[in-house]
Every structure is written in C-alpha cells, then in structure tokens.
Length: 542
Image (cartoon, rainbow, N blue to C red):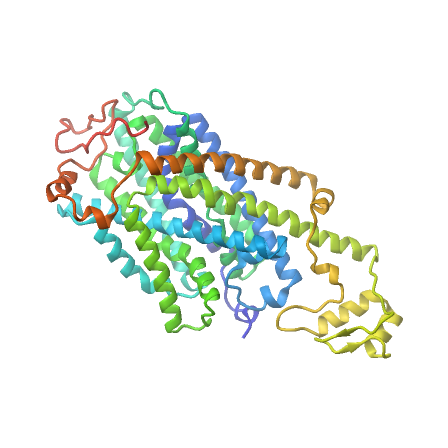
C-alpha cells in the first residue's frame, strides 16, 4: 500500500503539525532564553527574539516548499512511498549527493545534541523535584539511565503520525508551565525587582555570542520538519502550520524573558526555574517542562532513528532489527549525556554550529536552487525550447520505446507535438523509482547564475541576509561555546564523579534549591536565606 493511499483516511492536520513544531523547540528555550537575555541585555534580547522568529519561520516555510517541489517532480519516490530521510533528500535534489552527505551529518549531530540536552534537562529537574518534596538525594547520573530505559519503548514507534499525542501533550505542558513561571515571577517581583541588576557588571563581549548560540538553539528544530510534513494529510498546508507554530513560540518566549530580566536580573543563572522562590510553583513548572522534554525526545530522536535504519537497510515493518538499531542510538545519547552532564555550554555549542546550518543556511540554499530548477523547466516548456535528436536509434530501457521504428509514441510526437507526447508517456508509464519523462533537463541542477537571474529578488535578498547572518553569527557563537566548554564550565563526567569523595557529593545538597535574588544572590521573599538559598555563584557570567 502506498503512503498516498494510507493518508486518504488519516495523516496530521495543519494545527497538530504546528504543535509538533512547538514541541520540538519550546522546552529548552523557555528554560535557557532568560539567561541569554541577561547576557545580551533586554532590548538586544527582545530584538534577537523577534528577528529569529521571523527568520526561522521563513526558513521553515522555505523547507516546506522544497518538500512540495520534490513531491511534484518525483511523486513516486516522495509522495507515493514513505521517505525515511526527507531533509537530506531535499539537499540532494538541490545540490547533489555531496551536499546531501554534509547535511545528513549536520542533521544527525543536531538532533542528537537536542536529545542529549533534553535528557539532561529532564534528569536534572527530576532530581530537584525528589529533593524538594521527598528529601531524597537521588543520583543525577542514575536518573539519566532510568529515564532512557523508560523512554526506549516509545522511541520504537515508526513515524510522527504514530505519536501525534506526544506533540499535543508536549505543547500543552509547556503552555501551562509558562503561565506558572510568569505567575511565580510576578509573586517575587515585590522583593526582587527592586534590587535586581540587569546586565552583569563588566559584561564580557563573549557573552553576546553565547547568548546568540542560545537563541539559535531555541529556534532551530528544522531537521525534523520535513519528516513531520511528510506525515501530513495535506502537506501544502505546512505554511499555515509554520506560521501558527512560531506565533505560539514568540508568545511563550517573550513574557518569560522580559519578566526574568526585570525581576531577577543577573541573579538568574542557568535556568529561570531555580529563581522562582515559591517552591510549589517552581517544581510544578519544572515537572511540566520535564514532561515537555520527555515527550520531545520521542519526537526529536525519530529522524535520527529513521536515517540510521536506512543506512543499515532495516525493514519498514517492526522487528528485531529496529529494536537493535534504535537501542544503539539511544545508548549513544545516554553515553554523551553521562560524559557532559551540564547542558548550558552544550546547548550554546549546538545552537551555534549544527542548528544554524540546518535551521537557517541549508533551507535557504535548497529553496533557491530547487525553485530555480523548477522555474527553469517551466520557462523552457512555455517557450517550447525542447530539443530531441532523432538522427540515431533512441532506446529507453524502462519503456522499451524505439524511435527509429514508427511506433505509437513517434506517431503521437509527429501528429500532436512534443508536449502531448511527454505528457502521455509520463502519465501512463511509471517506474517504482520515478515518474518517467523524456525531458532530461527537468532533472538537472540549477546553477548559481540560474538562481541569481530566475529567483524572485525579494526572496533572494531575504535568503542572502539569513545565510550571511547564520554564517557570521553561528561561527562566532560556536567558537565562543567551544572555549566555554573547554575552559570555564568543566563538570566531571558521571563515570568519574561516582568515585569522588562521598562528602564532596553530599555538599551539593546542603544548600537550598532556590537561586535567591539580589546583587549577592542572598535575598529571599521568605526572610532569612539560610537553608533556602542555593550556593551563590557570583562569577556565573564571567
């Protein structure tokens, strides 16, 4: 049965598709973006939020149009059958196999990094939840393993159409969490807003690039978008899904960022959750964000699994090979999480490198070249610039048509013209790999000259701006994140920290769970800070 036939009765609608997009992006951004706004300053942070919302929405729409072009030009491959790696296929049809391989590597690293960040975030929140409500000092490293084991059965589901419920639950928990975060922050404002210090004193220039890396991470879930669009009932409605998704994201991100800056200032550290001083609100919101992150892992890891299955020729049907391949992928995610048990610098690194490439740069390049190629074909067909030489025997092995003999095909060609000839044979004769056409240039790649001359000038200007911004901003953010990860934020891996002195491990739990406000991070709305405030870190932004 073809995918088209299967979707006659099912498939994702555009609103649920929008929730899938929100589910892929929102969790890490809500937790980490307030920190990025502290690093960059309030107005710079708001500007970057709005700018990246527009750019990411634009590239999402471009990516959706690229997939529609593939479905029009190669319908048997991309419309009538299930495609396991739609994003790399878009890159291949735009610029060839080498570009596909480069994109495939970036996509896998990108999705892999998001899975690691969400796994760390979920485990850290569960650890704080157990400490706050049950006074249990449970090992963070052990929680990573337990959570991965619980998630594994859900990662075996085939494609987004099989776990649409994860997107709905993820978006729902995130929305409720944002409401609670805003409410808890407003409760703290009577004390903390009066003494908050916005941008850190002597703010380092590198903090701006770290902030940019966080912003890029928060808007960069594009590698999974074509996989979701492929499961839509009407893929052409992906534009509507993108617009509603990024509108929802901006409404979730902006209030949290603005309130976090005004109320907590630079006492806010790696997560806004820990700055909320009402314990019940703090941990309920953390619990909801944890739910979002857990559901998002199921969504984000799926493209990696499908690409891995294609590489190892795993059958489409459920079986032992799917369990083995997907189990190995999840094991590697756990291994990296145990090796780098802090998500802040990892988030900045992922945002500045692979996220920038797959979310901003590649969609623009692919759309420009695919659109130019299609317009080039339509232009030539309109002008009837079709040239076929019949001065030698022409034999097509798929159709078995010999033009030297006076066959039905030649009679049609001579009597009714080339357009009718091509249409009849492309409509009536198909192979399993492609819809047949005798117009060989239809499958040719567009050149840079074609892109510059054929493309709509407004789209061309927008794409060039996004590409340049991605290269410069992403490069600077990546360099800064590598430096931070290497020199200033080293945390021992889990398989080393287990051998640390027990007393040193217990010191981590002798403080409270709230990052108190004020210049010295020691002001609590409940009075004396002893036993309430967490350990101070006045050099967090240095």
